[in-house]
Amino acid sequence: MLVSFALLALGAAAQSGQVSRPRVVTSNKPTLKGDTTVQAEKRAPVLQGQVKTQETSDKVEESVDDEDVIRVETNLVTMPVSVLDRDGRFISGLTQRDFQVFENGVQQKIEYFQSVEQPFTVILMIDVSPSTQFKIEEIQDAAISFVNQLRRDDKVMVIAFDDKVSVLSPVTNDRRVLQNAIRQSRFGDGTSLYEAVDVVLNQQLPRIPGRKAVVLFTDGVDTTSRRANYQSTLRQTEESEALFYPIRYDTSSDMNGGWGGGGGGNYPRRPPTSTGTIGSIIGVILSGGNVQIGRGGGNRRGPAGSSSSEYETGRRYLDELARASGGRSFEARNDLNVAFAGIAEELRRQYSLGYYPESAGKSGDRRQIRVRVMRPNLVVKAKTSYIVK
Image (tube, rainbow, N blue to C red; front, side):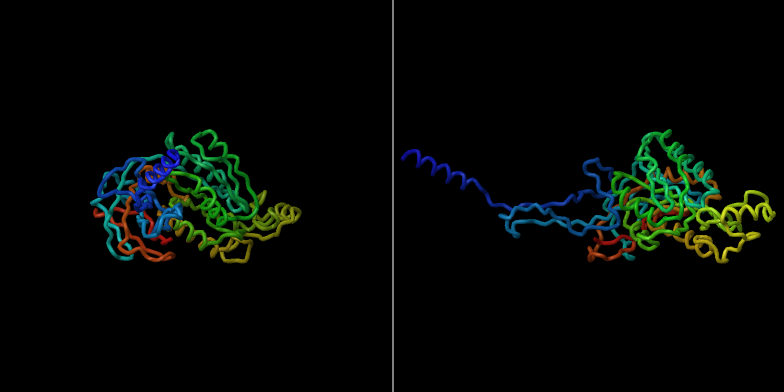
């Protein structure tokens, strides 16, 4: 009897010790205000263009009523920003007060600001399609030159693409491995540029933490993509946190050199001997090519990827790829060593701005962003839009 009484007393005590109180389900909303440098565990995330307007935990116990749950919403929008002078040199030393941010034309209050020097990871994408075969050594030299601009903590992945996408080197800071990977790139058939960008955006970049960018060596002309296209890759780039820096090579003169043959007759090759001689013409015929004396015009009918309109589309695509990501595009005929030094400086020393939009918006809404610097003669590189998720 005494034992039963004791057990009943213990049960009553346990029940009386339970206190009904609301569970607070929080997101990772940072509590950053003003001009500050944050510790690693409190660093605000850099969102990938798509912004979650409500973040809640799915792990709420069934026994807890909805009225007992406090839901905390967050829609912090953060973005990397580079500020350059008219010569492309990074401008350091700016503070939060030097920036203004506008969303859909309405000025926003900057709630998060950071300016630190950090290592970064770059994916080098090398076009090894037939159209670049006469530029490949120049492209390889340029890629190695870019690697040589980096510091010990900066890392690189090397990817080559023709009609397929091949990873030549995983992410590493071993310069010898990277140089060997760049030199081993070999030609294939076709140019699946859009599919290569798609693979990088969806398979490679999400695995890379921290600050990241893509340096793309190509003429911009796509001939064989099926699973991705011009517009789909631009939309994905807009939603990515990686910056794209295309280096454009004009291969139109090589593609329109007037000589068929090789690669299944899809791409022209330079003649083995002097142009227009009987021996070279016979050689082309015996090799299964098509004979065409003299240089072809940019608008003539020819193999895929050889017309002037296709080259113009390629140039426009690379420009829009850079603009959608907040990066910059370059022409290979210019001084690339200066360009590479500027890219490395931008990636290493970017500013990061964040704000909470005045209106949260609906899922799927596209918001336009404009960042201004309150100093004259400076150029701002930043994303121009994001999509509410």
